[in-house]
Image (cartoon, rainbow, N blue to C red; front, side):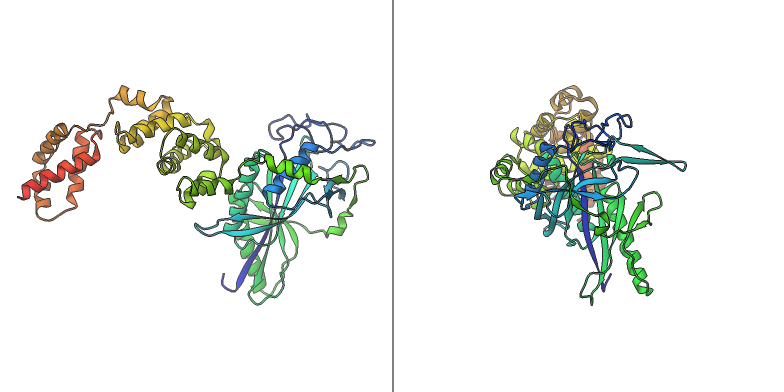
Length: 485
């Protein structure tokens, strides 16, 4: 866009996967599948006389995320009341954190392009309670309070993001970290992870940032990228026309693929934040932080570095395999079964992913596919040992494994797919094909070297794809060379 620069900050709202709500023992349920208002209690409904109690598991999960995002964990954090009225907020205020958040000053490294790394700073991560859920039907609004009070971690980036591609890379990396930690499922379709994009544009001559807008209702990372691109173009058009951009909350209409203004923004002081009088200040000891840090699992960046330095994978392959913890686990199980890492990576990221896509399996669901890691390793062992060739494995055995759930060896035995490697048998078939295709042989003898590939294809067809490609090519070349003599 030439003289215009895009400036983006992202806010992520991640529901924490605790058994009970943020300030009461009321259970957390699936807010999409559960019967509306089936998991509520007096505190969820904002009844008078109720008192909140901090969910310590949520606090620990929040610290885990803060450490994984390279944040500092202040020794003191405090809850505050954020006052505003909305039908899905029964108390008339939300218990959140304001000037004393749980984690501050972190960062995430992203790779928006292969081989390039950019650091996106994380300003803060703070705990709060989620609101209820409104459903609008034929001019009326229904409210479900199952989600009200669920622990919510809000993660706010600095405005370091310069494009929709970087925003998508940041969102995917953050989602991956949350899933690795086991504190959030990452299911945006159910609203357990929600992103909001603060977007502005800046002219190359500007010394200060311009007004920003906030895009809500983003139910997928891809739609977030589309919404950002739309809003950037809209703002640039306004400025070029001599108009201004007003700070506002925007909605993304997925069906229309366009932005709509929902309301103009409030200032922070309109929320009238003040310390929550019913909750104590939380003191976070260094010993507690160190204990949590020692229990953290390996995270995507750590696994990626290990796959590169110990297993010899490229940075790109390692990033693909570590984007989801379940995929990394599957890959490691295949390698542990004796398959060379690069071979396992190539087959997994191409053939297996292609099969998963065709059957509408998300990558994080690799544990649920009909081909467990041990069976996939068994198929690759048959290829490496020469029992079957790669073409047979890809085109016949792997699809049959998906359909039937049978092991590769059983399929090879039942369908008589074992590779033919006997030179005498292959030589006889080569001679047969050359005799039946004298015109092609003549073109090769006349200098058309490429025709040898067509001859090779006919030989493999005659052998029903079971010939050892290396031996077939060697014998074919020998037979053709003799005809030159």
